[in-house]
Each structure stands twice: as structure tokens, then as C-alpha cells.
Image (tube, rainbow, N blue to C red; front, side):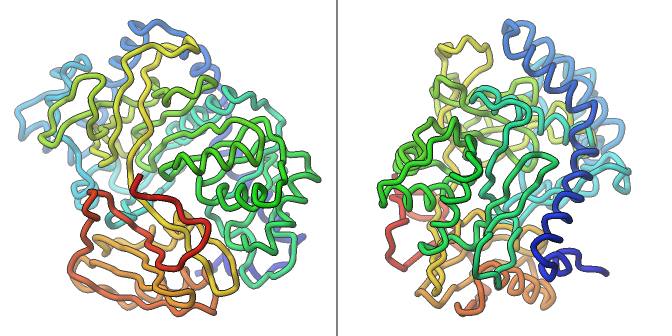
Length: 470
């Protein structure tokens, strides 16, 4: 099998930029076509709908998803038959609690049965969860789900003032710049979607100077990244008394700490818009210009909050988030228990939008890795090597010293040698050859006394650690 990533890494920079744009053109065709444009228009209209109309829309979509799941998914046919239910029993949101919760373990065990075809249909895309508190889950999306997910993301960006044609800098998890490259440019251009992909794996004190210069040269007004990657860049600027004024900065995928928000907003002289989404495509929520919680995309999915027993909690009380996708007919997820915790705000938002809001979501706590050559690596970008692994129940990365990383794995049965070598190779591509990487198979990885799960633990003192206990 041809390894396209290996070919990409060996190409000269000009050819890497070309290949990135060829790939972007394919993405543009698949996920940003007529369905996407229609979804954007619908979402922008629906955000001002009265609550009653939003509810009618949700219940209409719910009835379709339940019927599709029953007709085409072996898993849901068995669940409904076992519970003595029929799709006609789910007429409203009030009936949704009749359906048993869908757990991560069930998704992992019944992946094929959850799908609505025995084999993926043309146009379906396979995605993976991060797999930090357990093994990654494989999930499937149809083209409609891909378009609606991108539309929900774009709607939130319009709340921050972003418009068609604006360029944005991305500091995310893809290895767009080979690790062996030691001199700028540590970025590549996606001209199709007007994106500059900055490397998250070259962020040393000496290299960050070139990042700042490129942002200034390109006059970028929007940035998006993980809180930890943008915190690294923002702290570099703040420590040197430099500001790079933006219109808005977007963060996601990690718990956003107060100190991170303060540093990022100070460095870029703008407000930060944090949003929450899942690879399972059941929940999407994002900040509006009022920055008072995250608006739930009610048209995207149904969000419930439940207690430890699975029963709904009243609005205003904290609970575990449960999501039901209203659009993904490739792999329907009905009442999916995310494991994340939040609270629904009961008061209306000053922005006038009618969707409910949630508080910041509590997930996991993580540290930043520092390599022997001085690069800072976000924990989120280290999730990618774990995503293809299906035999891992839990994992954890512990940086014992500057040149030693311990990878703890709780396997399901016997850990395959091929998976171990694949994991080591992918981690080496991101961390570099200087650090020793040791894999340890363990029986379990406990949570902290606080109840939080620390997927990345750094025992190396540096100025980029945040108070994860908070």
C-alpha cells in the first residue's frame, strides 16, 4: 500500500503546498458543496426561531433518525425489539428517555451493527475519537453529516465576525511540516480554503519568532487551535511584550483554562471564542459574542444532561452530557453518553438567540510535553497516533524527564506487535529521535483523587504548565 504521508514528507516545500491544495480541493468537493451551503443558510435562519419551532424541527428530525436506525441498523433493531418498542413510540423529546443510553463500550463492541450498511457506502468517511480516556472509537459519517458539521462550525465563526474570503491560521494536529525540517517556513498554505496550517510540532522558543513574523506579514485576523498550542504562542508573545491584533481566536478540543484565555486574549488583543464538538457528531456548542456560555446547536443534535443513574437532571444542575445526532444516517447515535460534564444555563442570552446554553465542559486535564530540543507539544496533537488502535482500553503519556516518555497502555487482550510498532513510529514522527519512548502494558490507569483523568502528565518543570486541578 502506498503511504501518501511518507511521500508528502519527502517532497520539497513547494510540492507539499501543491499536494495540500489538491487534498483541499477534494475536501471542498465532498464537504462544502450545495448541501453545505444550504445547511449554512438554514442554520443562520434557525438561530432566531422561537423555541417552539426549534422543538418541532428537532422532533421531526428525531422521528426520521429513529426510523432509519430501526430499519437499517442491526444494533437498534435488537435494542428496540428487546425493549418491546417500535419507532412510532418515539414521537417527541419526552419519549427519548425510553431509549437506553448508548455507551462508549457499546459503540466499540457493536461498531459494525450500529452502521446502517454492512459496508460503508460511497462518500462515507471514517472518523476516530481521541481515545485519551479509553481506546479510540471508530465512527462513520455520511456526506450530509459532514456538510452540516462544517456548517455548524462556520456559523459560529460568523458570530465572531468572520466572512467568506477571510484567511485563518490553524495550529492543530496534522503533521503538515516534516519534523526533520529545522528552518522556516514551519507552515503550509491551503489556498482553496484560505488557511495557513502552522506546525504544532516546531514550537520552540527560537522557532516561534518566525511564526509571529508570518502572522504579522500575512496580516491574519483569525486564528484557530487547541488551547494549549495557542497558549504556547500567546505566552511567547506576552513574555516579550509583543501583540498581534486579531479579530477573533477560536479554540476547541481541550478544557480551556482561565489563564490560557487571559494570555491568548492579551497576546492577540481580541476575544476568544471557545467551542465544543465531538468526533461522534452528536453535540456542537459554541460561544457567541456575549461570551456567556456556549450555545447548543439544537438543529445539529439533541442534548440531555443525566446523573450517574442515567436520569435527567433539572436545568441549572450539573450532569453528564448525552447527545443524539439528528443527521448522521450512516451510523446513528441515539442517547450517546459522552462522559463529559456541564450544566444548562436557564436564563436567556443577551445576544437574543433562542438556543439553550451550557457552561464550560469538564473533560480531562493534561500537561504540555517539552522535547529535548526545546519544542513544546500540545497533548491534543499527540492523540492522533492512538486513533487507529482498536485493542487499547486506556492509555496515558507520562514525561518522566526531558528525554524520557513512558506510554502506559491497558490493552484488550494481547497487544499486537504491529500496533505497538505503529504507535512508536507515529509518536517518533511527532516527538523526534532525541527522547526515549518506553511502552508499558499495565492492568489499569486510575483517575486522580479529584476524579479527573490526566492523559498527559509532565514531571518536567516549565512555564507552560497550567493548574490542571482548577
